[in-house]
Amino acid sequence: MGRWWDAFRGMDANRRFLAVSIVLALIIGAVTVGLWVRHITYGVLYARLPAEEAGQVIDQLDQMKVPYRLSEGGSAILVPANKVHDIRLRLAADGLPRGAVGFELFDKVNLGMTDFLQKVNYRRALEGELAKSIATLKEVAAVRVHIVIPENRLFTEDQKAPTASVILKIAPVGSLDRSRVAGITHLVASAVEGLDPQRVAVIDQNGTLLSTGQDDASLGGASNRQLELQQSVEGYLQQKAQSLLDGVLGPRKALVRVNATLNFEQAEKTVEQYDPDNLAIVSQEQTTEKNSGGAAGTESSGAGGQSTRESSLINYEVNRTLQKIVSAVGAISRLSVSVIVDGVRKDSVPGTAGQASVVEPRPQEELDRISALVKAAIGFQTERNDAIEVVSIPFDTSQLDEERRELDKIGQREFYYDIAYKVGYGLAILVGAFIAWRILKKALRALKSLIPPVGYQSRSSTSVPFVEDEPMSPIATGQRKVKLTDQMSVVAKDRPQEIAKVIKTLMVE
Image (cartoon, rainbow, N blue to C red):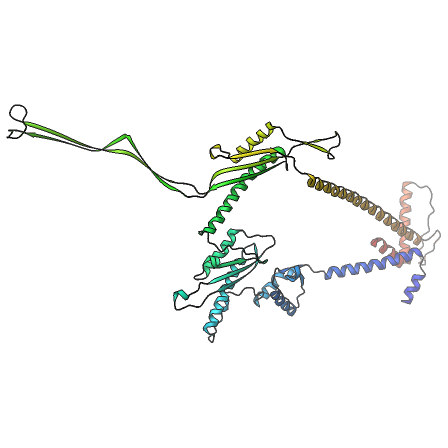
């Protein structure tokens, strides 16, 4: 180290700079290579694990001496990406993560188990299987199921019905509607003998009751379905009218509200009609009697005492029409539509747009045309006594103006940031180019200092005289380049270490 330090102190400024640059470049390169070699890309092994299961998996990873990381508050475990599948298989062989326990509880037969433990294990297995089935829904992140199966009683009036409760953890990107909750309740009720869907309680992680506890056939269930149907009809008609007005007047220029009265009465009637003008012959019977040699007390006609009597019987069927009419449930009985249209905004002073404006109501002719368009869009019928009201009222746009000003400020700020970024990027390129030019200039100067002056005599037996500069022809110029190359080769043979330092410096720069 002493010799190295003495050699460093004996160098001039340029050579010191080159030596320090080479050492720093080697150190930075070694650190970079080391970090790159030690860099590990991690992949997700398991996500959304409960705390107890995550702890069991981490203990097993420690025993396996596998590096890992935790994310998402400890619910997600990361391992090297190239070993994810291998580690999952090895953990699955050890039964991790355990999750919900199902009917695999009965894989091992325990002859000493009591009847009570058998019932408890059966209930645990049933709860685990139901939890696994419910967890397959994409909206469900985690689930727990609790089932209560009462003991069998001697008398029927003492027997209690089973109940169940389901706790759901809804995924951040999912939501459960009423139909899916009803599907979960019916799934649980169908898996447990004697369980009624009304006795299944479903709540989420926030404690909100999701199940109504009412069957669709009950009065409460029917009311809920009727309310949902009414809201659906109103929303559909309102969306049609609103989209039409937004296309005509522009966004936020009109508001539409629809109130629909639906008829949920289910009536059935039979109509029987008779048409006496349309008669059809069903049967016809005609009888003729002739008597000869008339006796006392009989009617006679003609010579020889013969008598003739004719009778005719005709049966007619009256044309009959029989109709069985069932009215539709949920038909629209009446519609009430309210439409509010913003006024026409004009600048109070020409050339000051956006500063002060005057709102004028829209003319009645325009309101009538808007009313006709809305009627055609929602299926307006005067026979149902439908009502529509279209008025022009100025909207309160103070909040919108404030939001617009904030957006303009944000846009200007981003514009200035973009300009500053581009200017800074350009300055950084210029500074980098200037530094590179300075370094290259110093390197060339150091290389130039290694070239021996005129009349330099090499230590070797071979010497190459230096040719002075003078005007030369193209051929002489080529010969001069050859001689300069020979001269540098002689210097390289005489002082190879310095030439190596210069080459390393150029490569690093």
